[in-house]
Image (cartoon, rainbow, N blue to C red):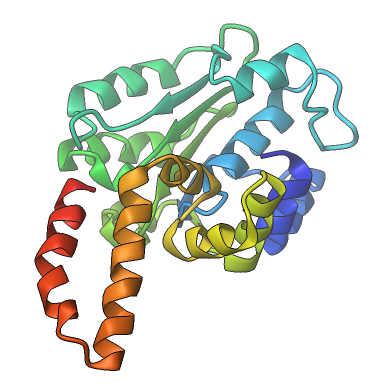
Length: 241
């Protein structure tokens, strides 16, 4: 997702962060609630910190640093994701150890924790001191689909930004990516992000499940007995998905 797409899907948050960058007031710890554009925003802000050809405060998107960040290969931007549905305490302790070090290519470091609600409680607690007493050039972004799943101690120590799904924006993005209008509309309703929508696009079971659901609804509406015979088929399709 480029800057124009990010601005289109989260215009208010994009403008707010551009203003924050212009004022040089980027905080050291943020909690992004909602997955619609939140990872893209974290990467955008990372690029704004490391870009070598900035246009004002905006990253150029084409320098070596920007490209490496987009590819998740820049050494001073660390992205942490759950393994087996949990972010282990050991991984976060490794992260805490990195906070006291300078970046490899720069004094700055950025840490992005995706699905942060899946941190073990001990892991989350080990970050509290880091958030309270941050290094001057260290930035951390917690990404979660629901801020209420985060520890209150984390919520109270971070600046919270909401990334609610914008259905119309997602539909437009999917159409621009080549999907026909009907499929783009359905995927925009079911998906939380363009990445998730693109993943579902290639899943035959998803479209089969959707078609069977629509068929049953139409039969139920018409009072047809066949609808009850299809319920078990629909349930098995849902299990497969």
